Length: 292
Image (tube, rainbow, N blue to C red):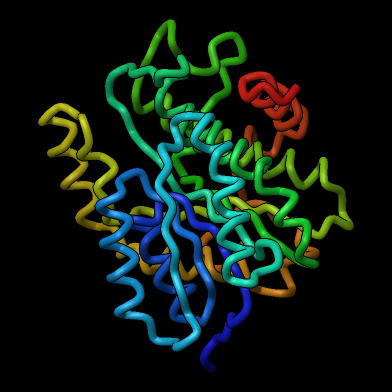
């Protein structure tokens, strides 16, 4: 049976490649209005043209916004831009947000705002973007936030005295920690919103996917290892189906399962299910984003 999401509106970060692009295409194919976010203006325009040309539903539509999600100032600026798009196209609120944008940096790299790059993009951006857009999500009776995590979170650990690993940086450990933070954020969000909340959050495990994330700014040996590893991965369309399911399946509004893969709940790590750690991380993120 063909799914129809005509009238629904979603925001997808990291929409110009990989899982984000596949998710955008899947939602547009189901008749949704999608606001994609990408860092490159040229790439955004190319993706808009590509997705619209391939859309299998006449009502499906995509608009693209340009923003560097490593910068909190750019994330905050997205709110009025999205509100303007909603108003211009006669849309009332957001049905869902996909926090998909992610990065991997082998070497320690700081953003202009002073945060470690992976922490800024993979952890702070989903937290802040969700917070900034929450009023728009709350206008819909059953909205969703889906944050793309990874089974790498099983190796993650919160170093509370050095969350960004700036004193002893290890790129892979930093990545694993951000993916753990994604699940903790999801837990804390649902706990703070309460059982009767109209907005529900989930963390998605994409599995091993054929993406370019391991090739950017890494040494030749790391790129070689990543190329061999990703050869056994799935196409981005596979995790995109899981994300679309989490965004739209009505029965999940009352689910207490935070972590999902292949449209099924999956047991997250013990550290990811630590409620005290989730609440502690939330407080730290508030401070880092100036929301405390």
